[in-house]
Image (cartoon, rainbow, N blue to C red; front, top):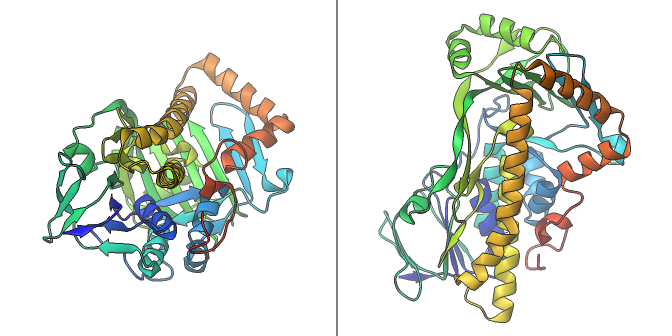
Length: 410
């Protein structure tokens, strides 16, 4: 039996980040991951799954010592964002220069973020990676949890953290249910080569069936996230590349000219989901294991990074006061810090989806009026940008500022 302070189930972006943060604070941490990340790929290949990382997430990654590696692999900053409605003339443009920032965020492939964090985790002295391996059973009946791995190892710890994603086996083992619903939309993702350069501007057009996002990659390509009705998504996935490109060009209103080329396509269903409980004695949920959100604002992994950073703050404070890491007195502080904020964001994105993905004429007029007013709002628009970037509001320590390096405290 090997003893740790915390065992993290899942070495994806959020799980690896949590492992890094805890290790940098001197906790003994184990991260269990079924599939080790790919170490390399062709330079021209772009992952199907990308994330729009906010400034708060960038700060987290800087503080963990992973951001420079991410930049070396590929991170595409964007300085502007254009949003418009297909059912009218309403549009709003956001510009980083309006608030004196260098950019509005970065488009980063998920595999890039995961690899940088995974390799950083391997550099830290109090972190142990178990991969490829997975958790077969978790026992939480004794004074401390025990985690049994398929590879034969038995890990004893104070706290188990589920960070394996939406289909978290550890959450299922714990019997934690969730509430939510499936959307009448599937998301198609792909990399495309538009006729014109995107100019480092992210674009999103709202249509009755769902939004189409064109996210800029630094070499002029775009990663698309096209949310649409399931039947339409099935139709689009069945098209030959040339026919798909024609429909995509029309759906984008040729905002970047025609789209003559598309890479491999992927498709996945969309749903809203929030775990009934984020904690149990000796157990906490973070990231997609705790919640799922519509991708229209790209908040998924950003919420996950805030979850894990808030949990780190709670565990550091508990250690300082002598409270057990896995006690409910400790873990309820984490749940209070994150569950309400996540529900608010899930609710806001759900309302946005319902407001924009419909054919209701009065709502269409309201949408266009709202976009036009937002575009001319001045200070309000700046407030929206700052809030979205994570420059204001209550934030955990890792997301608030850049702090000292490894061992320097976070």
